[in-house]
Length: 213
Image (cartoon, rainbow, N blue to C red):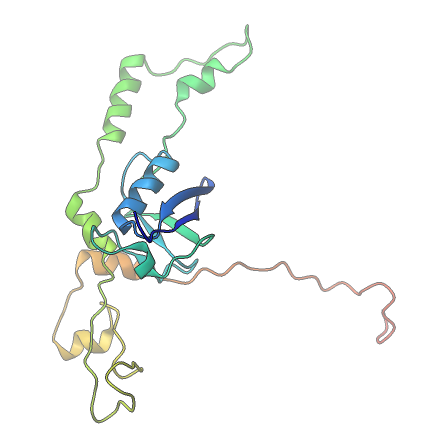
């Protein structure tokens, strides 16, 4: 396609990091398809974010292009499951048993029919498409510019007019909303910030003479 640029994006998941090649003119829905193919995922029940804190989500769309999302060559994307969806195939029990040395006794286990039934039951748990679409939406409550409090122009944004989270307590009380929606509750439970902790060392550095041992 004329004017399109090829770029390589990195996708970090629970199973490691993969590289995919796309065009900046591709729509975000195509990006989701390429990630699904590259990582050999078992379902489309996942979402992509531009940041590790998972605040800048890339919504799957058939009209929004990647260049409009500000993606550049070499950027890292972060993949996370939707509503606990199992994205990668789990190793089967039969494979583990077959890897045992010859002559070693094998413990009695469920029959092949039972294993087949259990596998069918586990793979049958597929998220509804409406749930996947709702989870990919930001769900934020948009607010208009306040002429009394806002000091910026029409294109600016401040704490008085920035979007609210769907579980904002003041907004719920003001509009007499007693109960959160199911997806708002799930997003609230998974919206915390997870910071990696560094291991601290309080040992005296070798050669330090500024204090007694």
